Length: 298
Image (tube, rainbow, N blue to C red):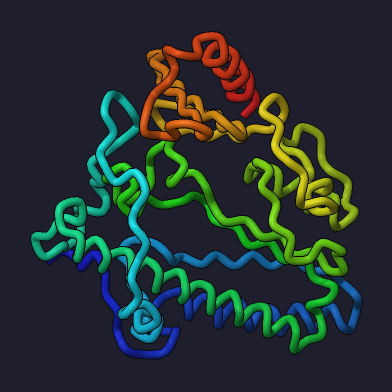
C-alpha cells in the first residue's frame, strides 16, 4: 500500500526521525561541551533535520497550531504557458492522496499546506532544543550557528507540489547565520548569496585559513551591514539540474536549457508569469555567458 502524503499522529517528538536524531545531537553537544570546558578545544557539530519533507508527517500538536487558521492565497497557481522546467509533481503523486488533486481541490491544497507548516514548526522546535542545550552549557555566546536549507518547495506555485524546478519557489532556501557578539543581531539581508558561500564565511568567522580553489565568497560584509543592496552586475546565484541551469540576479532570472532554449523572468514586472527572453536579447546573452562561465568552475 502507498504511504499517505501527509499525517499527524499524537505523541512526543521522537515518534518521527527528527526527534530521534536531535536527541543524539544533544548527547553529542554534552560530550563536546565537556571536552571544550576541560581543554578549550573548539568543536564543529552538524545536525541534519529532515522535515519538511515528503511524506509530510509530524506530531499532531504541531498541526494543531494551524487547524483553524486561514491561509493566504498561493501566488502564481496556474501551470505555466510555454516551455519551462515545470513538471507534473511526480514525487508528490506517488503517495496516497485519497484520489484528490490539490490543483483542483482547494480544501485538499490547504490540508497539504497546513501539514507542511506543521513539519516546519516541528523542525523549528528541534532547532530550539539544540539552542537551549548550548545555553545550558554556557556555550551560546561563543558558538557560531548556521541554519540553512538545501532548497525550497512548491506548495502550488505554478501548479507544482514539490521541488525539482528552476523557479524561485524551488530554489530559495532559508539561511540564518548567528555570530556571537554581532552588532547587527536580528538584521535581515536581502542580498543574493549562495550555499557555496557558507564555507568561506565560516573560515572567516573562525579565523581559519581558507584553502585554495574554494568556490563562493565570505559573507563578512553582509554580516557587518545586512542592509547592503543587491547589484545586478555583481551579485548572482547559480542553480542547476539535469537538463537546465539558472542564474538569478536581483531583478532577473535566466534559465538555460541544454539545447540553448532560454527563459528570462523580470521580477520587477511580470515575474515568472511571462518569459521575456525575446524582449531582452542582449541581456539574455550576457547572462548566458556569465552562467556558462560559472558552470565551468563548479
